[in-house]
Length: 152
Image (cartoon, rainbow, N blue to C red; front, top):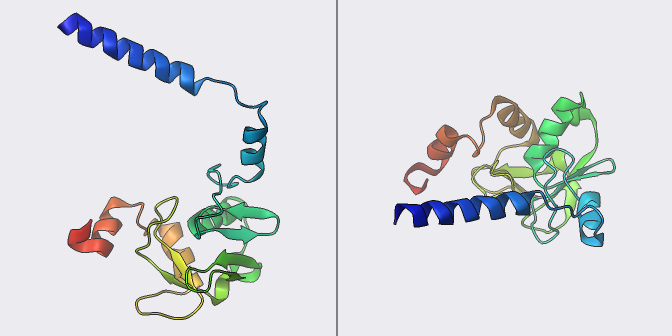
């Protein structure tokens, strides 16, 4: 029985290695994905998910990625125009004008969902930047538990 389990494990590992090393760079599908990928995390941007942000010619899958990208590239987001897609009005607005909930399920698990109209328990863009740079977002297990409480 032990040899059988070892055989199955070996087969599984082999398929994972083969699958991960497959070359898709020549396919039209992979070219499309690379042109609509987040410049920070390289995740494909799914247009059906409404947590996207944009800055200049770059689109981001998560507003948190935009903040981290701006830090890596010495961009002052407070003085640079960026847009975010809002969950309530389903349109892009200036990131500085949006209100952000901190407990949303987002593509990179940072937890910041944008809203055009102020709702209860939201923060502004300056606070969002501060929390991202401090690591105070839902990708941090301690912060996640603090925000969600017993729901975590």
